[in-house]
Length: 228
Length: 251
Ligand SMILES: Nc1ncnc2c1ncn2[C@@H]1O[C@H](COP(=O)(O)OP(=O)(O)OP(=O)(O)O)[C@@H](O)[C@H]1O
Ligand SMILES: [Mg+2]
Image 1 (tube, rainbow over the protein chains, first blue to last red):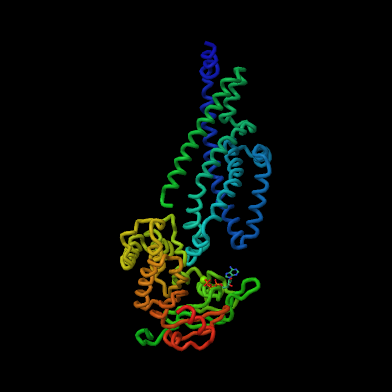
Image 2 (image 1 turned 60 degrees about the vertical axis):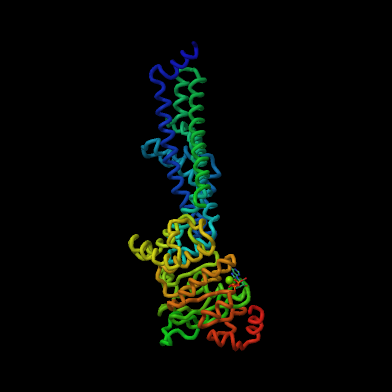
C-alpha cells in the first residue's frame, strides 16, 4: 500500500502531476522549435561551408561559420544557455522558454550543419553541373536540386539529432525553466520522495525516445524503399 | 551528308583564342572556331586532348583562363554577362546523364521551363510530353530516373535540355556510359535532332556516327585544334599525320 500512498502523494495531491505534464509540454515545445531553428541555421552554415569547400568563395562567411562551429561545439550547452540567459538577455525581460529555444537552437545548428554539410558533399557534382547548365544560378541549384537530395540522405541523422536534443534540454532547469526534468525535481523537493517523480521523468523521456526511434526506423526503411 | 539546305549560315558562336589552364598544364590553348546555326560539329581526338574542356568552356561550366566566346552577339566570357540567362539557350548532355533522381521524369523536364522561363505548369507539361513522345518515352513520364535504363535516361536528359528550347546542344560523350545495345536509341534521337537543323557540338568516340551526321569535324590534340574540316574532307583527306594515325586506329 505504500506504493499507492507514495503515488498519491507525489502525483495526485495538490495536483502535482501538473508539474510533470506542464514540464513535458515545455520540453517538447523547446525541443521542437529548437530543432527547427537548428535546421534553419544548420542548412545556411552547411551551404556556406560546402560552397567554400567546392568553389573557394564566401571566405568571410566561411570564417564566421567556422568560428560559430568551433565555439558552439567546444563549449558545454549548459554554459551556452547560462550565457545567453544571464549575459545576452541580462537587461531584457524575456520568456525563459524563448531563451531556451534560442540557446538550444543555436547549439543544435552547429551539429545539424555538419550533418547537412556531409549530405551536400555526398551529392554527385554532376547534379550541380546539370542544374547550372540548365541556367539555374548557384543558389537555385542548391535549393531545387542539391538540398532536397541532401535532406533526404541526412533525414535519419536529423531525426537522431532531435532525439539527442530532447535529452539535452533537460538542463534547462539551470535557468529555472520548468521543463520535464525540473517538474520532477520540484515534486521531489516538495514531497522529499525522490524515487517516484524522478523515475516517472526518466520513464517519460525513455518512452518518447523509443517512440521517436521507432518512427525514425520506419522512415529510414521507407526512404530506402522509395525511388532510390 | 553535305551542307544542310545550302542556305547561307548565321554565325551562332564565335570562339576566339580560348585557353584553359590547370595549374601547370594548358588543357586548351588558343582555340578559335566559328560555329554556325545548323552546324553539326563533332569533336574527336585522343583522351586528354581537351575535348571535354573545350565543350564545357562553351557554356562556362569550366571557366576559361583567357579568350572570348561570342554567343549570339554577346560575349559570354565577359564577367558582366549574366551567364545563367545564356546557359538556358545552350543545352548540355552529359556522359553520366545527371538526371535529378529525386524528381519524376516529368518534373525533371519542366523544372527549368517553369522556374526559369515563367511557363505555366500546364504549358511546360504539354511541351515536355510532346517531346517525350518524340523519343518514345511518354509512358515513362511519371517514372523516377533510377527506374529507367541507361538509354532511356540519356534520351530523357536530351529532352530535358530540349525543353529549354536551346539554340545549340552540347553533347559530351553521350553514349560512352551506355551498354552497347542502348547506344543506337540515343544516336537515333541525335540523328533526328540533326535532321531538324538543331545546332549541335558533339564530343564522341563514335567515329562512324560522326561520319554519318556531322557536317564539320574537329580533331583535337594537346589542347589545340589540330585539324578542322567538312566531314567528307576530314575523313577522306586527312592532312596532319596525327589525324591520319588517329583515324587509322579508330576506323
Ligand atoms: N579539373 C581538372 N584539373 C586538372 N586538370 C584537368 C582537369 N580537368 C581536365 N584536366 C586535364 O586537362 C586535359 C584535358 O582534359 P579533357 O577532359 O578536356 O580531355 P578529353 O579530351 O575530354 O579526354 P577524354 O576523351 O578522356 O574525355 C587532361 O590532361 C586532363 O588531365
Ligand atoms: Mg572528355
